[in-house]
Structures are given as C-alpha cells and as structure tokens.
Image: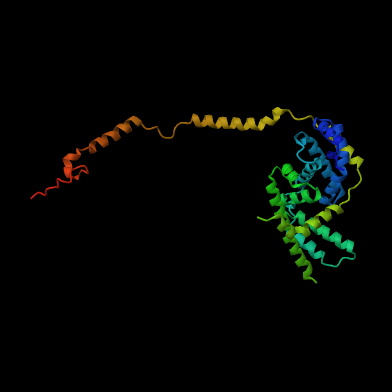
Length: 191
Length: 124
C-alpha cells in the first residue's frame, strides 16, 4: 500500500505541509525503501544512492508547501529524485554516450553462463539505453514504468498536457526500440 | 498521429521488458541511520526564507530598468529637432508655386462633363 492512499497519510501530509517535521519523518519512513531502490538503480552504488536519497528528502521538505496533491506523493517525490540525480551528474555525464552503450552491447555478445545471468545482462542494457535517452524522454519512461505513474499524474507533476505526455512516451519508446535494434545487430555481428 | 493500437504493436515487447525490469527491483530494508541523519539536517535548516529576499532580484531588475529609462529620457538629442512650422510653411509655398488655373491651360472639351454634342473644332 502506498503512503498517500491511506487516510492517516493525507493527515500526515497536511501536518507536514504546515511545517511539522515529525509528520514528514513518518511519511519518509514509509517512502524511503522505495526511494532507495530507485536511487540504487540510477547510481549503481550504495553511497551515491544514499546521498541522492538524502538530497531528495531535503529538497522535498523545502518544496513540500508547493505539493498540491494532484498526483500521488511518491510520484512527486520521484520527480524530485530524478531531478536531483540529473543535477548530481556532471554536464557531460547527463547523457550516456552511445559509444559506451555499444561497448556494453559488444561485451554482452558472449553467451551468458545461466539464463538468470542473461536476463541480468539484458536488464543492465535496458537501463543503460534508458539512461542514454534525452532527459525529457528518460523522465517519462522512468515515471511510467518504474514509478507506475499514470499519464494524468505525469502531466500534473511535469506541468505539461496529457497529449504531450503521450507524445513524449511514444517518442521515447520509439528511440528505445531503435537503440535496441542497433544493439541486437551489434550483438549478432559476432555470431 | 500514432494510435494506441499501433503503439501496442510497435512497443509492446519494450513495454513488457520495462515493466519486468521495474518488477525485478527489490526494495532494501528501511535504513534508520540514513533517515535520522537526513531528518537531523532538515531540523537544522533555517525557517522559510523571508519573503522580502525573494523580491530582491525583481527589485534589482526594476531599479536597473528605471535607471535606463531616466538616462534615456535625459539624454541630449543627437540632432536638434526640426522647426516643424518652417517646414510646413515651405511645403505650402512650394505647392502654391505650382498652382495654376486648369481652364487657362486645357481646352474645355477635355473635361469629362463637357457635352459630347459639342465636338471640338480644329483650328484651321
């Protein structure tokens, strides 16, 4: 169950928005593990993920009065996490160069030892492809698939129209499909 | 425009892979040390900044604009402004010098209102 769907959750949110740090602390006790899982997926490193979660919590506290309840609290929190992560990256590291993605695909050419290892490599490659997308496309993919946000929620939290959300999602999936085709060609080139 | 049905055909495999990857993510247990450290930082944060501070950039921009307007308004004109009365009088005089009696120059039959029954007589 998500935090904001409960009755107590909305009471706590109201208290936190009014400046009650204890209420905010209780909210974050519920949300922290999920936030940490996402941060780990972005950073791949526990210490960096912890820093990211901490910075996200601080930013969330500062902008909590602006949370208007038009989306789930976690969706709102997730957008802060995405933006903090983007800020933490250097300018050049914001988009993974395609060359490194191709290198990753070449490394994945070799047959994995087990089916599980193969799935893991595929998942790694998929995450790398998502990381290589432009920020506006990466944002909608992560929100839709990893934060389970609806298109309406995404529109509210990103401040864009539902039509733009649909269009961005379509273009992002199209880019991913093309990247995947290219990676498959690279993988099969060795066989 | 792409229809949702086409999206489904084109990207369904990719969508499933993304859902699957999201489902594979396991949540770590709650980390009390991280939580308390963050909450300690939050509690030591100063209260909300004074609203006045938010106005500083706007006030700065306003002052700069006002200064620019004042400088522009008090600047010496590069060229002296022309004497409009003299220019108008000169133009009127020029027009007057071209004025002429149309009847003195042109024959009456050229007028479109002249009677067609009174054809022009060519001078012998």
